Amino acid sequence: MTYKEYETLFRHKAQNVGYSEDDIKSHLDYAKPLIEKGLPVIYNTSHLSSLVGYTRNYLKRVVSPRTPHFYRTFKVKKKDRGYRVITEPLPSLKEIQHWILENILYKVPVSKFSKAYTPNKSILDSVKWHKGKKKILTLDIENFFPSITLDETDKIFKNLGYSPIVSGLLSKLCCLQGQLPTGAPTSPYLSNIFLQSFDDKVASYCNSKEPKVRYTRYADDLTFSANEFDENELINFIEVTLAGHSLKLNESKTRLMLSSQRQITLGLVVNEKIQAPKEKRKELRQAVYYIKKFGLKDHLRKINCQKQNYLRHLLGTARFILFIDPNNKEVLGYKESIEKWIANENMRVLKESLDKVIGNPDEWQSDFAEITTIAPQGVLCLLSAASYYDLTTFIPSMHYIAIEKSSNIIKPAYPPLEVFYWEGDNYTLGKIKINIEDTDIQIFDIEKTVCDAIKYKREIGNELAIEILKNYLKRQDRDISKLTDYATKLSIENQMKILLNTLLV
Image (cartoon, rainbow, N blue to C red; front, side, top):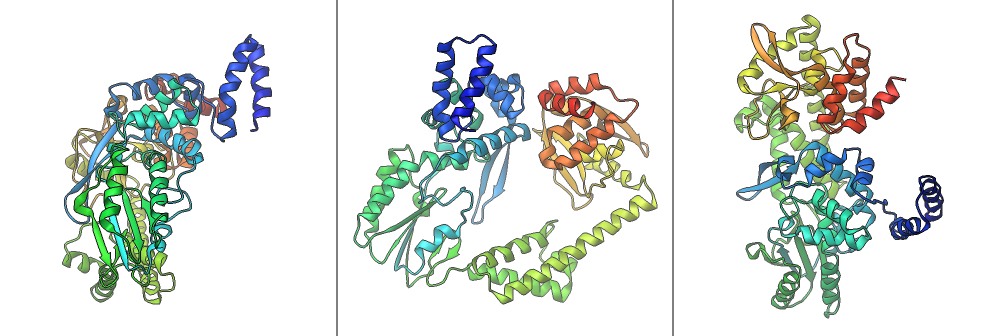
């Protein structure tokens, strides 16, 4: 929509409700620069609420001091040693952050020297600039996302043209306890915007050298290359420049690599030819060889691996190598073999599941007792609950359970589980017990199951969510009042109203 179109529409609506000409002009003066930048106009909390599809009260709860309740924290093992702590927003907040990312942040240009987290750019866009250089220096920014504060995030939105109130709201939706959380979808691109002036200053410094030094940044990884440069002078410059942004280097990760050594940046060898490290290629080669020789089960037993997605891990490795070297015939052959194994494994699982369902329609429910043993506080939810209530014809390949956010379980190889960590009304609302094979099983009631399907449509798929709601509305025992009450408590009142108004016509 052009500004002229927006002005006409806004004037018409504002005049109809009695806005003065001064009020109209004030609003349009605020809106014009945002529209010209391709950004959505947001006047206040209620306006943002209508844009993202969540209630004003939900937004206020998210940005209150209780914000940690809208995140879960877990650890991911690092490649070298130790663990990386990830703080991830729960699905509803994550959906709002995705809206901010796609409708606001992606509209903001970042430095051309920033190669990560940008649509249509890949790791190759960074490493290709450093191939065949005599010297490569790699540096790492310490504690990257958490070092970018709420105040800096607020400045980003203000600089885009948003009011102090809206900027404060948007920044709080993107931050946790005053800093960027590591698992939020908005954090990476916000970090790119935050470091735009840093990138340009560093690039200017590098271009002033003779010979010129090439520079790229991939998230918190800085790479410099040339046939000759003074690495100590460069490091000192980076330290001073980072300090101006309240950042510092992780000195333990500083690496200077000469052409006589294996030069690795961002996990790729860049000496004369860009390629994956030989260790990764050797790992793939050996895995394929042993699976062909001994079979998948024996191979997994020999390497003591219980990963359910092992084949997909191998396929990811093959695709990564081919992304770097698409004409590698050896790896193309490995990829073809792994894809066949995955197809065969999927067919085996499908046949087993159909044998259970067709041979005895209630057989799949026999896993519930085992789930209760594995997760005593687990509650059947989403597709498992929807299948129990005959709200979908879809046969889930795994059981969906919810447990309290503060709890944790070790997922078994069987039965396959998809675990959701919920709290508050998400976990307690509509929780009931059913009895299957003399075992009490916790499950969410049918209205809570329908609301969860709409709330978590990103996780289960929009088509399945709508199918579940449609089938519920066909039931004689439907309770629309209870459904809308649940929707309000789960902060999806607006979404549910729109769907009900459409489907109950």
